[in-house]
Length: 315
Image 1 (spheres, rainbow, N blue to C red):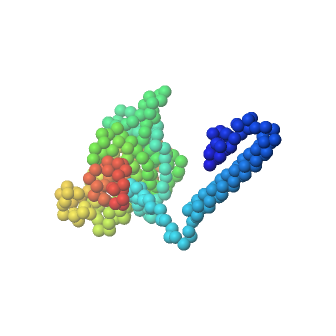
Image 2 (cartoon, rainbow, N blue to C red):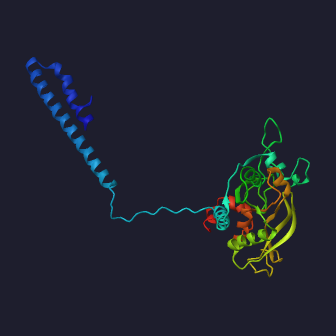
Image 3 (tube, rainbow, N blue to C red):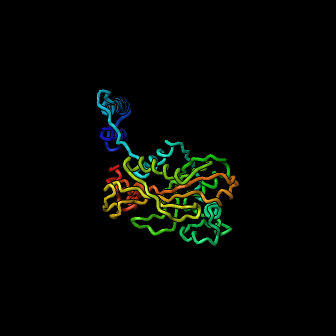
């Protein structure tokens, strides 16, 4: 409308251009009338423009107005990752019988990761830990921890007995990723140090844990094994919770399932931290992914890290 009435090609502009052909009296009369018309049209257009904006704002306000009588929209609830759930339950089982939770560094020195744990540089047990070293000016001194056992030394260096502690955390090994192995995984280790601690105390403690995680009807069996930082050492088995020990695919027909390693703390560890000779203790360690795999009957550990929502929603 503004272009049609006031533009350069409008009728008002044509009249204005022809004013030169008029005499003075006509030019004055026509010019005055032309200005009146132009002013009236401009004012009308401005008024209509303001009205259009006002109507637009009113319509937008009406559309965006909240209706407090409408039901609220509930956001979709998230869930803890299954590995986080299992980690929390394992920790809760030990906290319930008096253990404390202690965290530690993921990147460790060779001393805490190996030497202080009775594994000097030429010890054959080091070959069991395909290790990821951190590049530094002094090669071979800084590693991504291969277990949370270094926290045993760190805690004993700064804390006198009695100690009842668990150490959760992520560890890394240069393993090939397969359905049963991961290069990085969660581990939880425990340490008990006090006067008069025996192998029977260790077995009783681990029975409490196993029944809290897998069910009250389980039995625990211990087989001799080897770990450089415990002596004697053991592998801990629980009776199969899927078949009650009769033999199935979960336990590979054996009726028993290995869940962790354990043993009495090696005297060399106590010497390294300056503990008195009358102190004894036990330690144990387990992989969270393995416990979750057994508990939920998952056949491939990699499934926990694929972030498939269809899988995660099962938990």
